[in-house]
Length: 259
Image 1: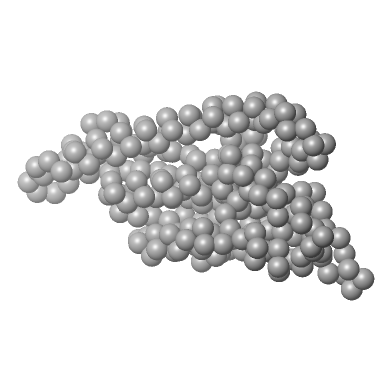
Image 2: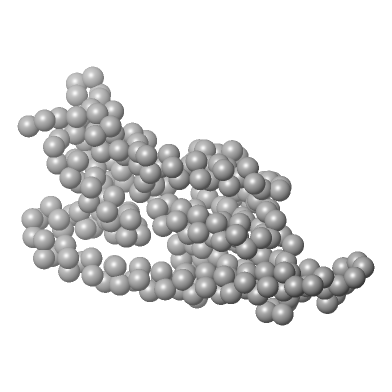
């Protein structure tokens, strides 16, 4: 039977060592200890990590994954599938809500873009010029991408604070996502601290707004502890990012700031 030190398991699985330690603390990935205190993992750790990563990509919470692992260890696949069916169904419902939010956001962008692309009035801006109001709606349009459903109680809307700080990405995928955020941050007109995170502002172009929304949705899919809020006005696109205190290193790595 082969054994792996934490660095060896991280290299083989593509999961960072910091995440492996977190999984152990969360009860997902047991490890033995050598007499000198080093973590040692067995052959089953690689397959176990594959299951954890797959479940994370489905949007399952770590407590749900822990329960699935306990059922999985009993060796009956049918029982695991039975437990997964309602969990996946719940994620489908949440995804459909997010799609509806993004569709409304996209429609507003298209309306504002069409209005601004038309002939401009002579002279200075006014209340009817299209720069401060649009034909689709008045005022900013909020789109919230969070791990909770929009119709949930206010207390549940803050559940991202308690979400496990672990990312489903690893290796080249994680590095690629990090570079995407860093390139986006370079295009921000302003960047300032906000409660529990930061706020970025961008020019309100349809192309850039679509990129910001798509990247935020992708990040939320693998890191449910992030909370993203987008506000769009005809002049400014504003992105607010919040995260639990434990996620400060990840927030700094992506955006160059800490909570």
